[in-house]
Every structure is written in structure tokens, then in C-alpha cells.
Image (tube, rainbow over all chains, first blue to last red; front, side):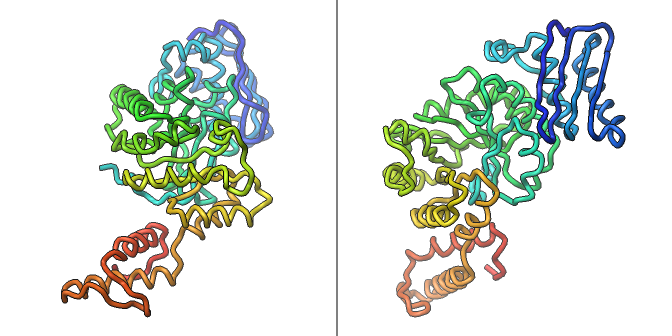
Length: 105
Length: 299
């Protein structure tokens, strides 16, 4: 997917994470987390795998983690990437179908 | 037939599908069902984000046998068709149709669900439906809604929207909901479906909550929509048969079986006159006790 605009998904509430995706060159990932020492590698792995599944090759990705589970990390990365790639709620409601079980899994 | 059609549903706890802190472990409170909400709890600009959150929760969180119902956006919105797709792709247990006003509403969601089942390779009939009645029109059409589909397991009252439509408000006395509650349970029972009451939002009034649960139980309801884990224990206590009720039901079932074989139609159990008309209620009590995990007898 091609990131063509800046978009954000998620919140700074406990158990959530906020993901911002911007156009960029290559994958430029920055992670801030209160549990970075314990789970930093696992968080990074989940985010990079999600970006790979979504075929995002060029983007600046900023993640502020507040203790999110894997499933939340994936959901927020997808939320930001799809929003940044033209899959707005208006476009989805107009018939642009999301790839549940495909790129989203 | 889907084995979950008539499962135990004493408590159905609302959770905002967009809030990870709420949906990550609600099973610890042991509600019978959770209601992952894509509708009113989710802000208009977060509808898309809530679906990604819902999808991964359904696929990756083990809810340990708690039924996973998803409330989709109303048919008057542009959101509901994608809501149905994510429900089916994530393989939820049931879909709750918001603001249902007619059999056509149920059939429209069922048709969309069947399309999605085909698309995602999900077994047809494995996901059930329920309908929320939130308007005077919905209440008037309760029976046609209840009988619209064999996949529909029941109907639930949504008191907030209903009282707006009725041009009144929730008073705490229940008078404003009396007609709707009565109409719904009659329609549901006539159609052989389950019936669920609306939420009780004053969390500081646990005594009032208990009275309301006892009232709807007496009316014949199967369970209550709840908004806080604190309401689960009271709801389960009221809706679970007591040991005294279970023992009496056991005696009725055994005596009816025995007396029927001897050609006796009317007899007494614990001083009460009993005939065959008591049999279905006694069987229901035993089944409810079994489903709630409190039956230790041999029936």
C-alpha cells in the first residue's frame, strides 16, 4: 500500500497505542513505550510484520505504546495505514472493501 | 440447527469495541455474553478504527466460552454493511441489529451476512442474529421481527431510544417501558424466541437494579443488557434457579413421568396440586440450572 498522506489511529489511554503514519522513504520506525526494555523487540516485530503484510515499503511510522496487546498494535497500525492510503470511512462505506483475512490478519 | 440458539443469556455486557482496555479480558467477570459495540459507543470518526480493533479481538482473544455478540450500526447509516463483513470475517457468534423496525430489516442483514459468509468461507448459519427494538414502530412489529428468520435468537429492548420516540424519558419507575416490555415478551414467546431487557444505567442504585431484574424475570424475560461488571452477580443470582426451586422442579418432573405411566393426571407435590401443565416449566427450571452449572441431580 502506498502511504500518500499523514494519518493517525489509536489513543494514549492505558492498554492502547497511538500510531502515526506519514509518507517517507523506506521504513523509518520510532517506538516510545513504558515497557520498551521488556517488550521493545516484540513490539517492533509485530509492527514490522504488520507493515510487511500491508505491503508498506515507504513510510515514517511513530508508535507511542501504553501497554497495548499484540492485537491492538496490529489494529492501530492497520488503522493508520489504511487511513493514510485512501481507505477513509467514506470510501469504505462507498464500497472500497477491506481485505479482512487477507492483508488484515 | 445452531446449538447456540437457546443458550443461557442472563447477562449481556456492553463494551465499546474501540477501547482495548475494555475488550481485552471481560471474560474474567463471567458474563454469559459480551456485546462488542460498533454503534453508539463509537464516535462517528472512529468507526473504521473500531472495526480493526474488533477484528483482531475476535481472532486473537480467547473469551473462554463467553458469547461474542457484535452490535452493528443501524441500517439507516452507511456503516452497517462493512460492519457485517468484519463480523463474519472475524467469526463472531452473533450480530445484534440496531434500531430494528421490521422483518425486512432482519432479512436485509441476513442477506448481507450470507454474502459475507460466502466471501470468507464461513459456514452458513454459524452466526446468529438478534434484533434491538428501539422505537414504537419496532415494538408494534415485534412479532414479525421475531419470526423473520430462524437464525434470530431473540429481541432486546433499547429503552433510551424507545422513550425518546415515545416522547418521554426513563423515570426509574418503569411505567414508561411497561407497554414495550409486555408487548416484547409476548411476541418473543409466541415466536419461541428469547427476550432481553434494556440497560439500567444508575450504577449507584444497586437496590433499584435488583428490583428491575426481579421484575423482568417475573415477566418472563431471559436476561438483561448490562453496562458494568458490578451488575453481573445480581443478574445471575436472580436468573439462576434456587436450590429450593430446583428440588421442586425435579419432584414435578419425576412425579409427572411416574403418574402419567399410571394414568393419573392430577396429584400433589409438597402440598401443591400439580398436573401436566406444570411439566414444561419444571423442565425449563432444570435446564436453566444445568446451563448455569448449579444442577447436581440425575435428570
